[in-house]
Length: 181
Image: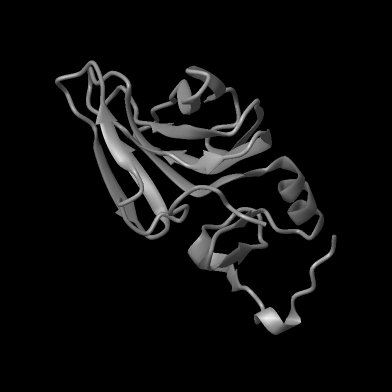
């Protein structure tokens, strides 16, 4: 079971790059306890933070918890770009799921590098992304059966709603793991 995003907590900005396309009004990016916050300014356009995981062909799910400030309701939250197909293969808009947990399934036709983009507001407001997850769809289904809603390299979250630092359960020692094929 792998979370395919680099630095999904996130603990720093090393794996997440800020882009301010088509704008002389840049957004800003900060990392707080287990979350990535993007702050826009009025007139900013298409500002986002991205990371680029390499994935094989298959069925995937991207998910995260989103919260905001100033009563701003965004339209575009997350986009996934397939660098081989040169096309967006997943888009998550604010359609009643926001604020809270958002999730979308998508298919990758061939081995590729994805560009996962979390969007900044195009107004003077902030969006905070936490519990970032990119995983194989079958892995997510299996983990949900066990009551696990999010995981990274340090542990997993079983409470389904709190921030990772509130309920992160450490993995058991490896000698207790069993591989089921």
